[in-house]
Length: 164
Image 1: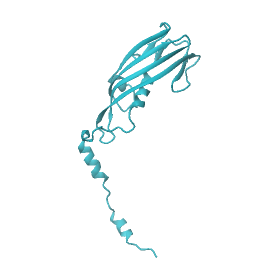
Image 2: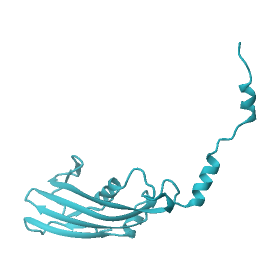
Image 3: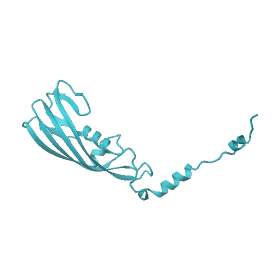
Image 4: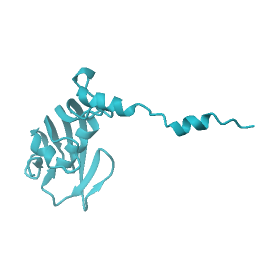
């Protein structure tokens, strides 16, 4: 998927804007992502300097993932700002969360993996419907049914043994 690359080699020094639309095909392309649906708009301001690139990334949209409570799909808003500094060197290297090094021979910057990681960071840890009434009540009822502790008569008999 070359849709999320920025060809920076021919750009002049200064500020440049890019916009990407992340849709279902993006999510489906990642094997280990919980979601296969979503729409996120990515707005990037790239500031090109002779020795580095400075990217200011703004993301806004919705991603559909399974509710932790009922396992039905729920939409979660994703909105955030990120910064990525790209330096030029001899090999690929990730110096920190915000700074990477790419070979000076590269002419394009593929942002696909970074966008994927940013979306994951914006998703809440606890993913449940905002309103519990939106949950699938058949699943909730089954969970409650199977969550009731059953008393084993053997344990009840052991409770009657008295130790001296």
